[in-house]
Amino acid sequence: MIKIKVRKKLFGYNGEFWLDIDFEIEKNEFLAVFGKSGSGKTTLLRIIAGLEVADEGYIEFDGKVYFDSKKKINLPPQKRNVGFVFQNYALFPNMTVYQNLLYALNDKKKADEILKKVELYQLKDRYPYTLSGGQQQRVALARVLMRNPDILLLDEPLSALDQSIRSKLQEELKNIHKNFGLTSLIVSHDMVEVFKLADRVILINQGKIEKVGKPRDIFIEKPVSGKFSFYGEVIDIKESDIFNIAVIEVNGSLIEIIVDKEIKVGDKVLVGVKGFNPVIKKV
Image 1: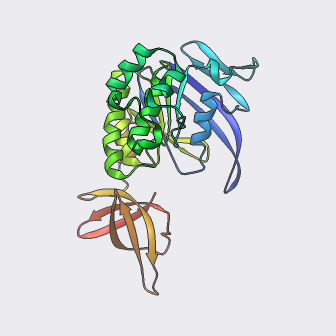
Image 2: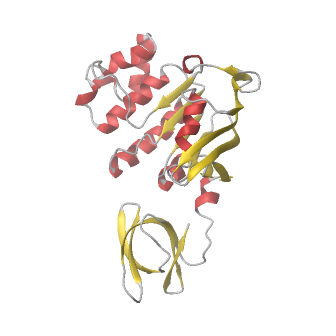
Image 3: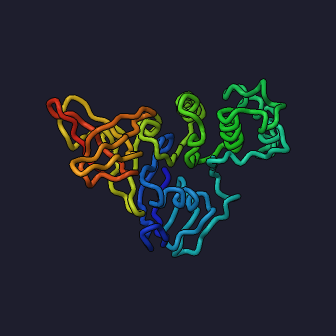
């Protein structure tokens, strides 16, 4: 089990606020941290990895203390058995796929085994710039797996990919998590992605935990009744004196719906049907 209880002062677009988080991760669990930009999600991952220092609190992995502000314990990143997959993959461009893995751990037998499992063995002598975005992401994952991390941290790992590749890699990521017996923590803005991958979701806002539960409990429990409902984001609004028409993106598709004046571009909304009339609620 991994225990994390940390506090750190942050500065967001609304000014100063505290990241104040207290939760546990079970072994082999796939946990997602979900919330708006600037709520402290990436900072939380960086604190766990040792790339940033919390103002107070502690982090414990299976009884091993990585950080304890009271006891002045703060293990550096290289002494924390943490795998971190960044948004930009962070591969060495002058090294082949094989060399990238061996840089993490000089074990050719293990590198061969991992590359075969993630279906990259035939590309092992290629350089990162010759690979697709999806292939580069798999290389980044494979390199992290070389060190058998206690926890795999994923910071929006698929955000730069188009929807079709992203959907395929979500399935691959889920299989990698299961086949390698990992404990994983992902930060994502994509509800569908979280729903597919996570066993549990932590919903945070301005540094505080608002909800914890299974994806279905977090995303499907609806504040409106009706035959169906779905979440989306307002990407454009056409204003008039009488009403506004919003363009809402839902999983790659666009719809137009009449909305209240309080709905703004960038809002996350829940669209439902009550009788024959659409109901739009800001979330």
